[in-house]
Length: 295
Length: 174
Image (cartoon, rainbow over all chains, first blue to last red; front, side, top):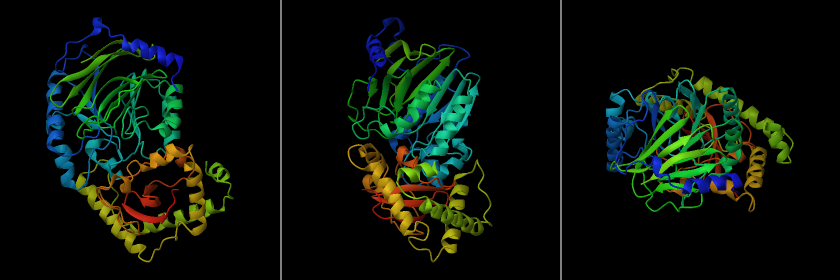
């Protein structure tokens, strides 16, 4: 299953580079002035105390790292979806970000009612799957991994083929690679999506579903992150495996990204504000890790 | 895609045509029943979403008050769908698909029970099963607004916008 190339990349990942290391601690500011900054959070809409604490930390992080928008990795609203649930599980905890004009771009999880696609603050514009381009050179593709039917696959291929963006970033709920004990990788989905990702040069794939953080060693030249602990947490639910570059299943959290030219900087932050993983990934070298720092 | 699915299942295309015809008829009934309901905006408030869904459900349930299991998924269509599903999920090779269909399946997740009945509301708060993408490549294509989902071993045909069960196939999963 793991190619020689992937194996070599994995070995490279194990070599920690002090040159690029960042001090353990909290959120660090962006490295470039005009970079694109965004955040990712998954499995977050519980409305419980911990999800509020994560949301508060999320807003606090923006003080240091001013991201422009958030992509959600599904399970946006757990349980009932009455109008008051949208308020209690999303609008209230994330009010500081919403008030600051931060846009949320959602993807659907298995706990999400389909009609969320019409919810104005999720910016899906009535679509289960959609694409947006926040700036030249970077394009995002939101997918509905619960229901990857042929029209969606055809749409994705068409959009990927037509995209000339340097950075192609896909986000959806079910991870193609995972070291999760409960769910594990969605191999069925991988069989459909991975060939398209490879063929059309997708650089980064963000997923949730597993209630922990995991950064996967590059697979076939693509970076994979799982950030599924925005509200839910499966403590001890990750069995580190040969594909794990870094991970954390001890607290809730989210991930911050910054794209500056051909480099993408990332930092995974917990509910208490601790940085648990960070590094720099390079685009054109197809999954070459410039530096990383597992805290 | 549809013909490929039929061929893969070793069936003639007639159950698929039958399904397409009955689905089209359902969509027409739905359109008529909901003709007085204002279209939901692409950027709506939660209360508008909830009202719209409720209005659609009431209208469709009223228009199909006498609907029964098998009206859309007729016995030959049920057999046809079962054959596709079972061939996809059979044996060791089919295990990933079977496991995939358990993800989000309300009977596996156990959070909110789903009563599998024609015209019943799919409960608010109940998760939705994943439908294996390899299976979706073989199942007949549905128009926007309808989808297939699993509840336990049953396959339901769901009106995703109205949140109601339109029809179902009992014990569709092996």
